[in-house]
Length: 263
Image (cartoon, rainbow, N blue to C red; front, top):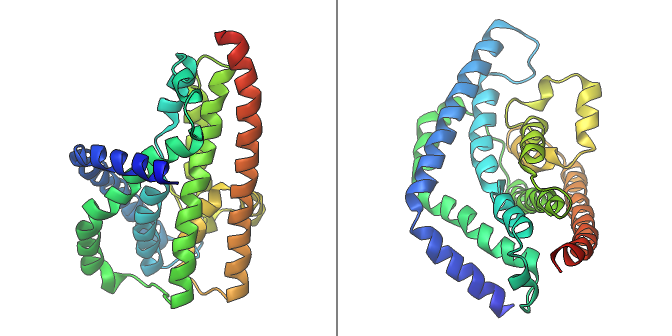
């Protein structure tokens, strides 16, 4: 495990040199946060069909601002290019797991996000706390952190799986863009999923995306009993395991094709 820690530490130090990127990315997220919040506040004030009140909308998008940034990954293009351009060979000769290697390169970006943007987030919370309604408890905070961890891992594995299709196709950009749009909608990043008809909502409950953003967000703004929280966590963990297994199978099959193609 020491070699993976060294990878993480090296990647962490390298990412610190690009800390301005994290600030600019967060500022863009603030713009999205503001637009979505104002839009849905206008909807709430002019209709009675939205289950969330004003405080619920503000709380929802504030938590989503944190969760979506904490669980996002950007490793897909690097992985895809290494497979497509033949640069994967150098990693296959080294004594480490390639997926864990990429995880150690990507994870520092989430850690740095916390350090770089904790103060702005605290300021936003201070300014809006009277307009928010958060239902917090020790057990909720514990599971919220667990949901964040597995939400990030689920997103990483989804991106890793898409990148593995570079074994079969020369470009996966269009596939990734399409899935990413669907993911943002299905995860509740664009709008709260409670506004959807129950039939659509039930379909999304059987997909992994909801557990990367919507479930941890709603955990902090609505009342849940411990049993329901634990069931949602089991679903999140199950999706992590399933995606992990699919990635292993796809990786092994892809390597066979990669070997025959690359010689």
